[in-house]
Length: 450
Image 1 (cartoon, rainbow, N blue to C red):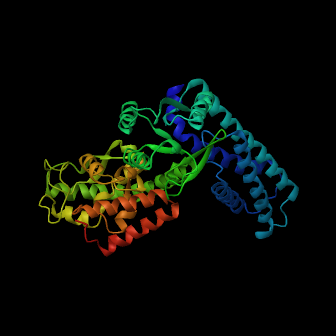
Image 2 (cartoon, helix red, strand yellow; image 1 turned 180 degrees about the vertical axis):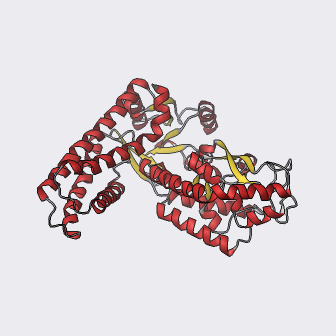
């Protein structure tokens, strides 16, 4: 059962959304609503539901949310949905639609979807409490009333799904952040909770830098200090206020699900529309010029710094330095057909298979070779933050001119700066703008496309 849950937990939100859409659309056929334009009606109710969901955060229920929060978003969702349903009659001029049947429809879907929502919420809480699956390993840095209260929350509210591992007391003589960092590494800690009142500003800064550079989530128990100027997010565990240092839109399940659906549809379009006929042609052209496989397959750093095999059309002659040395200007390893497909970015198209399989996204920070990830992680501050999301075929840094070879330190620093901006400000519209700009850049030509 635990294995099944682990395999399907990432599908819970998409399956819940699908179930809600089926209820919304199929229920209308059980009531005499008198639909004269079914396609328009189904498009309207589906689009309205998606828009309202984003507005009220219907699918963004945290593991520590109380039942009252679940009920609040349900009421908010259906209050707006009810108004939009009756607006449909006047807006699209539907005089024959039954007002009574429409009210019955809204009441029926409200009952069905609300019950499904609450039951799903209760099921997940009970499952975490009884089976201790999908747990997040945490530590607490601090030993005061609020820190101890948080630890009690972790212990008593087992349904939240936190696995408390250790408490560190900054007031004792042997305390050091190095000890904390070593423990985090050795025990694979995912989240760090710190009491601001017991830490010096230098220690807070060190914790922030460590969390950013090692893909750890850092949260604070607040006091009266104004410790930094970044955008902060307040959350509540039971009745305890917790400060999240960085708000990443793609860590919200509804946003991640939306991006995944977009990635699958877009990649499937490219695979069926382009790669099916282009791949045999590229196989002939590449093998006519040099011996070796059609695809260049290389381990790259992916989500949470997990390595994955990245696919490209081979653009170089076979060589032993492919995994060590990045292609540069006038690189002798690049073949004639290789220069063309690199200049036009055709060599990147097989990565749409990576997107379809879930290793990559269409838009995101570009994945680097494992060797370069290890190198830049030591030299570039905040470099590891870019691994909080899936890597992309194209990205904001690339359309801003920071693609290809890293010639100087400022190249990678600016790339990281744009990657972090993208991560913290993601939207589907931003993805579409980057895709459009990428296509325009292919036709205009890019300075570092070699």
